[in-house]
Image (cartoon, rainbow, N blue to C red; front, side, top):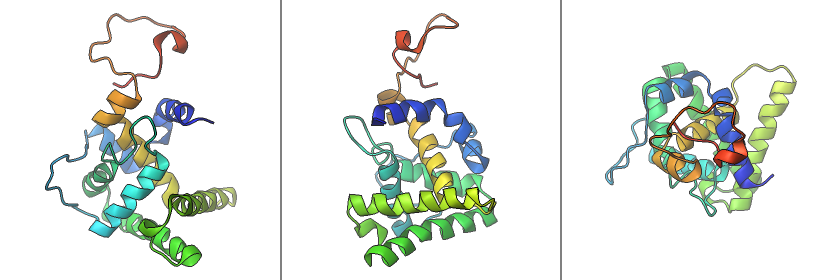
Length: 190
């Protein structure tokens, strides 16, 4: 599947991926702080650097912007700070620590020091672990599906994602029901 197809599918299924604090963050209008002197509110700088790399591997920069361009890591900090309960915040911190633990056990490095291929390997392992846990009926929270949903939400609700990855019409014009997707050129941002 091509990246463009993945982006289109992600945008279409965005509503299905939003759960818990992520949907609250979107509904509350949570957005990334774009100021030059930004400092994380909840995560440490090392955790923000890790989240920036994980986000960029989920939505990498190609001929269109990636998650770092949309400052998704800043969105994640804001979303977790203001929209999650303390026990959920603790689980998220523990969950993102798993990326470093897995990177260290596989490659003897911190996640942010890995090559892009090694990062992809670690992320794929966390995704596979989440799928395996779900298949076994394990209802304990898994970090990868949560982070992925938050990254997709943060990207497509950012100015960069809404105007450069989606078709953006500030004033879309008259209502036209039941038109083929191919005739309108893509999935639209709100």
